[in-house]
Length: 234
Image (cartoon, rainbow, N blue to C red; front, side):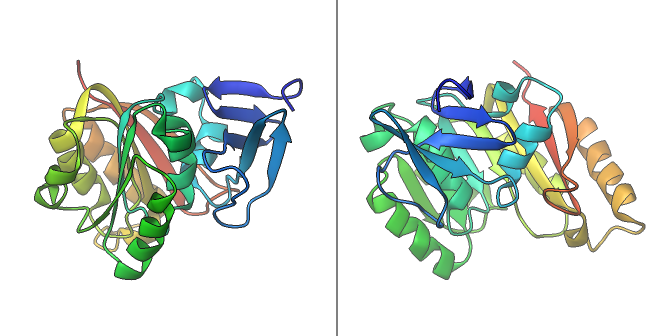
C-alpha cells in the first residue's frame, strides 16, 4: 500500500479516490468499512460518500492537510451521530491507546447515538462522548480541555452558520481550523434555492470574526451539501 499511496498527515493516506486512516483499534471496523494491512500497520477505508470531512478533503483546492487536525490536537465535533467520521479523526489525532495524547470531544443530542459513541470510546481513549445540545457552549465547556485546534459542525438545523460562528467564537483556538458542513435542506428559514441558501451562510461567515478560507461543493459525494472551511485570527 505504501508505494501506491500519498500521506496527507500522520495516519491519513490517499490512494487514488479513496482515503485511509491508520486504525487505532486493529482488527475492528466501525461501520463495516474495508481494512487492509501494510506490514504491522492496519488501515481503514474512509468513505467520502459517508463522511463530509472525507469528501471535503478530496474536493478542496487547498492543501488537503490544512483541513485536518494534527496528532495530539484538541478537537470538537458538533453533531457526531453514531461516530463513523469521529472514529477516523480519532485514528490519527489520538492513535492506539491515545499515544498522541489527543482529545476528541464528540457532542450529540440523540441518546441512541450517544450510546454508540460510548461503546466506541470504550476502546478509544481520548474520545469523549457528550450527550448535549451542540448549539449551547455551556453544555460543552466542562468536557473540553481548553480551546480546540479543530472544530467540525454537522447539524441538521436551521441557522447552521450562525450556530457555527457562535460555537467557533467560544471554542476555536487562535490559528485553529473550523469546518462547517452545511445542508441546504436544513436551512428552512431561508428563501430561495440551494445556492442562495449557501450564499446567505457564506455571507454570515464573511461578516464574522472568522476568516473564510474556502467553500467546497460536495456534489457527487454528498448532495445538497457544501463545506465551508474557516480559520480563527491569530
